[in-house]
Length: 302
Ligand code: ADP
Image 1 (tube, rainbow, N blue to C red):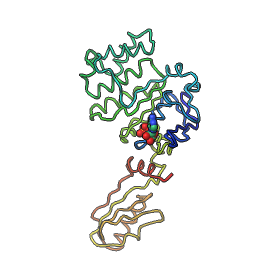
Image 2 (cartoon, rainbow, N blue to C red):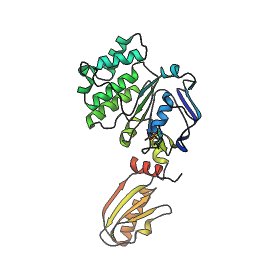
Image 3 (tube, helix red, strand yellow):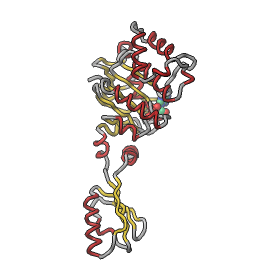
Image 4 (spheres, rainbow, N blue to C red):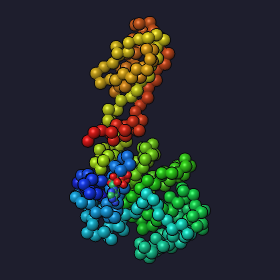
């Protein structure tokens, strides 16, 4: 197990920024940390990196508990903070060489070359950081985070503010890194998280409200689908509703039905139309989107 948080809490005054959070992670896993603003994502990441100490509970990295051996432990963690602080007036190589000195790396030449290759910075490597696009700055941030070849990589909002092309590139970089390392990254871009991650952790008001695969994420809530139906005459749709189904009325001829069993409802709507000699002019089904599930999880009253 590369990482273990055991009943971790962090308070700012009387407010719990992180409240009794426990989870484990192993290598070769990409974990998405989701949650609305202020949910405790950055604080959780800072505690994993040893920059913030938990008030309760413990964080263990490769079996060693922080904060007792912080310097040792930081060797195993790469961290890209949300703000991606870079020295703008440095050249990429100069900055990475500087970061090698901070990590006290002897083999800095080969490591700089390696991370430049891994992060696709080759063509830009002779540029000043302030001449780079946002996507390339993110690559430099990720490059500095992996210079010392850490087992655990913590990326705070690595894909925010990127254009669609840059998103694709950074997504495949994170995926490649996740093959060998434990990668934890936070994001507001839910579709991206869904595409990159093996596992999702959802925080809300500091509490872990969900820990599981993308499939489990969908199942963790009511998992209802929406069925839209339009008839050529006014009808009473309550005839097809079962316990747990919900009716969202749009007009006397068009309805949206929230259901756990869209196949049954569609079949019953067809049967109903045939038996009543009415025509169905439209019938569509929409699964719950990742946003719908996220809203449902984080709007729950704790
Ligand atoms: P997120 O990353 O999910 O947006 P944060 O971990 O940054 O959430 O913050 C969680 C809560 O802790 C927020 O209410 C935030 O205002 C509070 N918080 C974070 N850092 C500090 C701090 N240094 N001092 C006081 N409150 C803080």
